[in-house]
Length: 332
Image (cartoon, rainbow, N blue to C red; front, side):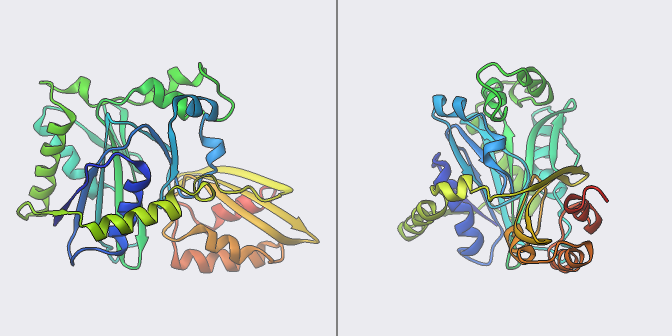
């Protein structure tokens, strides 16, 4: 295993760095990256950004917005949040295994006297309150797993930034959001800095990997490639916000694997445009499925064949064919 040393706090660079090493690993190694962002909202790959953020608040606070490669829900980063990324060969089982990547985090906290648990589909909790969310992305046999660790994040800012477009500056949702999340610092027996916590976590990671610590420093060529990717993808408003196609039918449902919203423009019983939003975890790019469904006859049989074939190659965590079809045909 190699530790990719990355002191940068620019969110565009940091997400580009993840993608760069997912697709251009420096050697046949497992990789770990610990990193932090300046205040940023990071939205999931398949989310409708405008529906997830409190835009007036974000603009006033100069909070950045960027979309990541992986699915799941929107999260807030600041310098009190430590992010961790693992890049490794994907296992033969395409069902997402979030727990095994959380074990070093749980063990690192245990050495500090903090009892953390893996909960739900992708969370870590302390006393039933969430302090970490995880997500994954697959690319050509390589797996990127990343997560957040709310070490000393400002939860008031977090709640308002993620309050949604209907909120202003004192949304009613803030108290309820804060009651469901927590930070690590209040549970520590002895106060430590986030940098000290990072060192403790790194030791736990390499201990579980069963290898000696090794690091990889970014080369000039690495930085140039990462910066180019940051400009072309992660700084692009089209990537971060997307576009909302014209639609005349909409359906939104919640399943064990997350929320799915389907927007359809149907003319003469044919799908002209299709958009699928949600905080689900797909193992493939959902825009490929959207493209396959566009131009298709709007019938359960026609869509069922296309969606079933796509799911056979790209399973969605805890969301099955019947779940997706229920979003396309909500009245059946």
